[in-house]
Length: 331
Image (cartoon, rainbow, N blue to C red; front, side):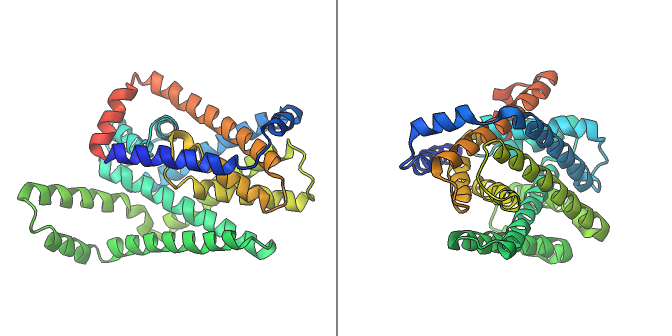
């Protein structure tokens, strides 16, 4: 199954890269890259780093009902997970993070995975919120509006499933028991145990104050990300009014991160480039300039996150091969 996912990811990556570079003058990309002001990259990287610190605060709040873990112990685990997504296929980094959380802090793998699922859910809902606000103040292309409707529907369905699990937990478990009756006894017990731990990881959403805190932190996280994109865009001197430049950076942020939810090679290669070019093209930015912006932004984020993750990975004496095998077995 994993091999099929890897193959699909690499095939889609090639297709996305081909579309991103379609009718692009590679020589002009070199000229644009050589004329960019790279002084903006350093503050953009610093803001990106702070965004991951805020992600850790949010993860700590989500985990609070399961276990109260100090932020300095959570940050390395979070960065290891994101690093793994950059170097391993099939987004296995999510399972890697849940695995190292279990190994270092004793949180069950299913509960840890549930907290990461909550993260992704709030990430998606926040991006959809940004896209909705953007559509009010700027006329999005038709495909941008369709993306907003589709992604909004997907995340609303996920919210509905969580509500069902949390409010009608007994009924949901009863239906699960009925549905797994044909399974062997050990398999049924394993499924019910894993689902129980998964529901435990969702408990943070039962307290209104905690849920509001997660929403607020999600907005902070993605506001930092938007600021990072804005600085990178500024470094290329796009001929856009200041207000429009901010909107372009936000649209770039939203489309790139929604696009990277599709299967691709490690590090979101292909999806990042294609959706970044599409986003900036909506603001009249020529493809060569748009692709140059995306290349610099992607490279900065990839190098920063991978380097920090590998540093903590090395500090904890972990084996990438063993860790990926254990995570795959857990997945």
